[in-house]
Each structure stands twice: as structure tokens, then as C-alpha cells.
Image (cartoon, rainbow, N blue to C red; front, top):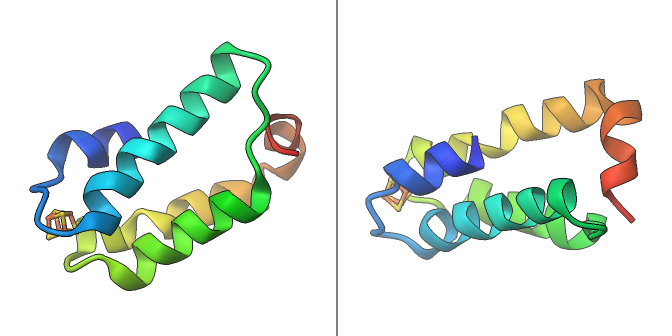
Length: 81
Ligand code: SF4
């Protein structure tokens, strides 16, 4: 979803343009390497995108990500510190 948003972002606002790219980078790094995502940093990223994006592309991304973190907590916890 981060990759899709980064690809589709029009680039008008920073939270979506940069946030989607940074989110995709963090998740890719966590999957491919021994990198652990900082939970606070990730939560800040989602909040910034949610309240700072100008349209629903960037602003709508955090909800499904939060849902995944809530309902697939056991599977996703190993990727976070
Ligand atoms: S949130 Fe909307 S306006 Fe902002 S960069 Fe993304 S697509 Fe463009």
C-alpha cells in the first residue's frame, strides 16, 4: 500500500509524497534486512499522513495500515522494535 501510494502520489503535499516513500522504504528494509522499525517513528509517520495529507490518497493510507497492525499483531511484531 505504501508503494502504491508512493507511485500514485501527485506530489503536491509533503506528508503523502515523502511519507509514502519513507514508509515503503522502512517496510522493505524490515523484510529484506535485519532492520527493526521504530514503533514511535512509524506511528508518527501514520499520524502525519493522516492529518497532513490534502486528499484521501495519503490521508486514507494510515487506516488500513493501523488495522493490519491491530489484527495481525503477532505476525507483524517481529518487524518492529
Ligand atoms: S495526499 Fe493527495 S494531494 Fe497530497 S500528494 Fe498525495 S495525492 Fe497529492
